[in-house]
Image 1: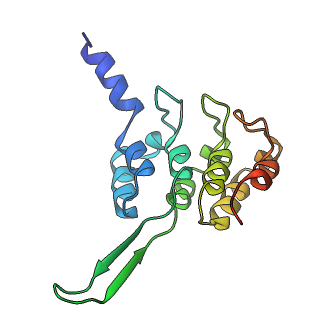
Image 2: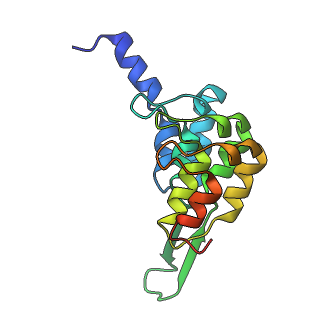
Length: 158
């Protein structure tokens, strides 16, 4: 049985901000979660991987959706938004310094994600490096590689 205090801790550890950072959704959802939780939500860590919302945002790309314009139209409008990494770093730059349970920084996760993708988000990499230049000297806890080595070993043309 979970008492009320344990239940609150679990809710605190995996917040709405973690969820909207992980799933592909419009940035307005992220902004609503930020408004609700404030700065404390940006540095909160989940219980399983000890990750902040920035770690999860680094594991996905921006939001993209194709919409048909009008009920019978064949014309398609593309809605495209940037990675949530930019929004989270704008509100909490120090989150770029946080390593998870596997000793991975958000930069390591982003490079790992880019390596298994056809997309290249060099702007998100640049943004993370701007906020934590020292991350270039930190080895990835899983691969034991430095970020530049991770990027070279990856499949991405980035």
